[in-house]
Amino acid sequence: MAVSYDQKADAALANTRQRGRHNEGNCAGATSNRFIMKQSMIFLGLLLLIAGCSFEQGHRFDANSVRRLQPGVTTEQDAIALLGPPAATNNNGDGTQLLQWQYVYGTTTSWVGSAHAAILFGPDRKMVRLVEVFQQ
Image 1 (spheres, one colour):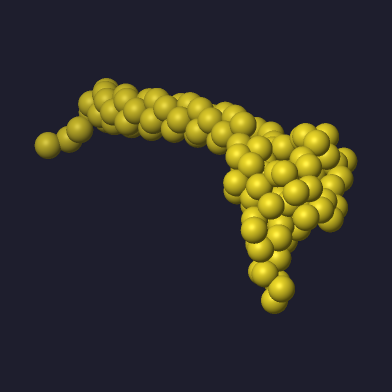
Image 2: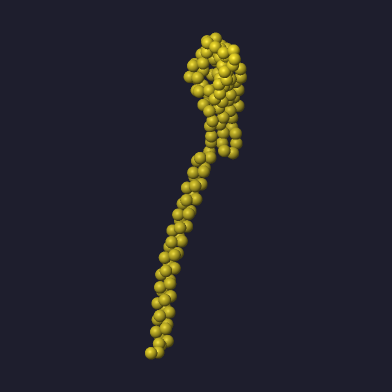
């Protein structure tokens, strides 16, 4: 049985149409994948922007309020209530205790400022003296 030229052409056309439908599906899938990828990149960029805006370390305090503390009157608990928990505590052999507070803040691209306070307390847990305080 001989196949005519028209039958071959019809078969080729049908085959081409079939491949075209298959490729259309791939194009739609590729467009969908590009959309998802674009949305993911936008989300990731926003997440990095939000997360990378600023940072803080320690409990924020005002150096001027530290200067108002009074030796012999202010207790260790008063200082902690005002400044928050100390970053470091050093116990000395004579029963005195040095408490230190530190606060640092800035952005991911630059350091902005800091504050530090060191207060010496006696064995009775009352303030002996202000060792150091600064704020930048």
